[in-house]
Amino acid sequence: MAVKFRDYYEVLGVPRTATQEEIQRSYRKLARKYHPDVSKAEGAEDKFKEINEAYEVLKDPEKRKKYDQLGPDWKTGQDFRPPPGWDVHFDFGQAGGEQSDFQWGGAGGFSDFFETLFGSRRFRETHGGARRPGGAVWRQAGADQEATLRITLEDAFHGATRSVTLQSQTVTPEGRISVQEKTYDVKIPPGILPGQRIRLSGQGSEGLGGGPPGDLYLKIEIEPHPVYRLSGRDITVDLPVTPWEAVLGAEVQIKTPSGPVTLKVPPGTQSGRKLRLRGRGMPNPRGEPGDLFAVVNIMVPTRLSKREKDLYEELQKASSFNPRI
Image (cartoon, rainbow, N blue to C red):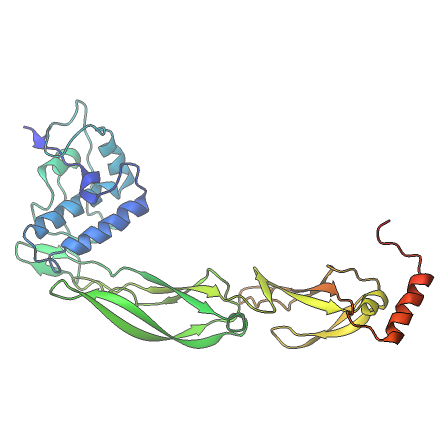
């Protein structure tokens, strides 16, 4: 007996080349839209079951591979019979097996097409799920959320506590979108780098059907600094020196994020040379800190007294140095 073919890619609204992340993202979006606890539209429950069935196949690389063997020429609603030699059985509900983001309990949860391809499923109820008439159980963990947190280099270096206010969207029992503001006291650990994230456990989207809330991740961005440049854990700073300090050598004081430091400029230092201060870069909570590099920039006076001009002219006559040779 023929069953009706189902295009699972069409159900989730993704191409056949979709990645697992794209499939999961589309599934979450559609499942939230048609979840029976959220949508009161006619046919939402059937649509929700279709979405779960499609995701049950496409999320699993083995089932997806078998499904793709049917080829791309089938259309939804066409009469379908498994090709000759088709014999595959998948075991659902084994201990330790992965559960869907949404769980569906009760007989008749999947279509004849699904059971023709993959066999019957032993449905499981998830503890804490919301039971609906007919034995259905829906439960979903809340989605994780991510926001950007811009901080100063000083906050990243020393650590800080900052108050952050973020907007979030929630779905009311009537299916409407509600925008809310929430303020968090965020502890910034010393040595955090751009791109790293701070996790606020349980501050993501609320779960459905008694599912746990997701987490909120704050992705760190460090604002450009007028003095320091950050590369990994190393910090670079410009060091202006006079011509005589570069020629004769000197001890100069420079500012660093951890405080002023006296730095020795060796005699004969050229412009552009990097002088290294070990361990004066960004802290590292799990290892060695970065270094600080002072880049020498030889500055010449633009306004000379008569005495200074005379001395430079005397030096010009006495010196045989030619930097262009």
